[in-house]
Image 1 (cartoon, rainbow, N blue to C red):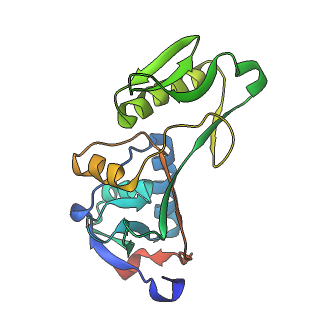
Image 2: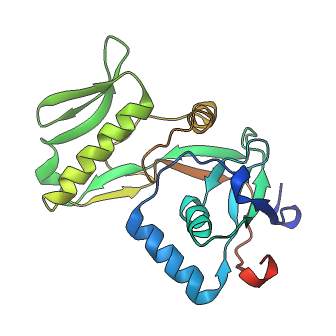
Length: 199
């Protein structure tokens, strides 16, 4: 697949499912941008399930603005040209934090665990562990410690595979915001579409 053969389609919003929650302040910024520019970059959807792969905030913004359709690139999520990656957590003043937070580790009884404040935080699933990690990140933020999500440095969260992500969406559940980081072995066109094209 190349940029030459990927074109946006207009998909009804009520057909679309999501797999991540959103950040309210980021959503407000996206809504403001759409209102100001009257344009939007297409979101990326799985062509089979219409699950949002990238563009959750744009999707919810258009939904809240009352649009019935949204421009989207449809791709086959299960193909090898789509990769689901993770966001590492880099802590500001990391040297001071090493004794507070360390890497996520597998536990002997099959649970997924991480060390936090000299205690082991465990869960039976990646889904619930990501939500526990989200609570920790909010706590760290409340005491003035920034958690910067990036592609390679810091605390490594558990890996997620595509079938697991699809199953979460199918159940109507949502991961915390910015849980998955998708990459593509083709170029996604970077142009905005005027809202006038599909009003």
